[in-house]
Length: 357
Image 1 (cartoon, rainbow, N blue to C red):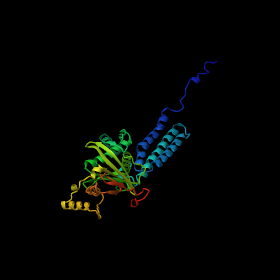
Image 2: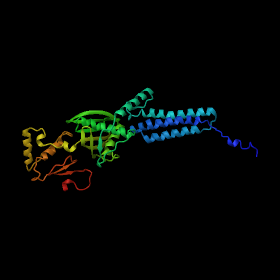
Image 3: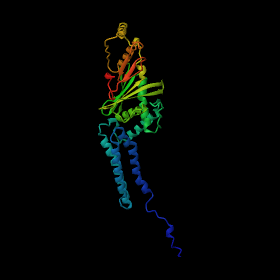
Image 4: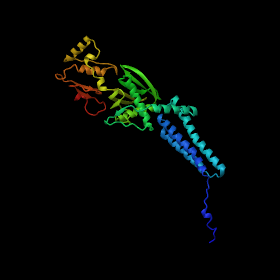
């Protein structure tokens, strides 16, 4: 056999430069990073149709891959493919920003911008805020199990910190109740009930607020998917200055969005002796006389969140539960009263009404 017959078989050939595939992949990597870290989170935060935009992004990526597969040889073909891919993927990002920035659900301060200096400053602010913010509460859910704290790098961690901040701020302000309601189409606002007076809290984007409400609903064992009916649940929180504080969660839906109320120590809040209601001596004596009457009607009325339940429970305690048969019907029971039969009235429940039982 001639000695030179197998010489070519021992030689290897590289038909494509090693650096060309790496360079062609660079636009895809940069595009994927922007999609996953910025655009997808932006669409989820402001309810901009996350699935719809994900489908559009995948279609754009498919077009870019088709551009990559075009049979154009030589260095000119490589440059054309690189420029074409970069333009297609870049247009996808620019169109997303242009369309979503016009959406009324996105507040002015949260719109996407391509100012590199501003973006860098914002990243530094986020890093500083993230290093300062931390989970401060131990939360025991409705199942008597402690709610675990997510990893700091997880998106759920920021939601928990924001949710805790809302509760801690209300507790430190000596609020008896926190209400979290839609302020307009794109923002929510908290209000704190302190000694019967409302104090305004800081506004939050709707997307962030809904995540906070969903977090507390999960803790209280409520159905997160039910955004219409009035739901109630209870949790217990422990932290700096608070030990085993009972918090009652009440959520409901409306045309403008979900509402949430957080009531601190609901049972203790309605426990008042008749002498501690702030009545004059003559007024208190009159109430005691009414309690001893065996006939007649006493009408008790007050605006919501102005001590109506507390006053009613205190007046019921004026009766002698051992010599009187006292029964009350409530939409929602706030505390157990000794010697009194308390029945909750469920409007949607089937069966006979209270007039026939």
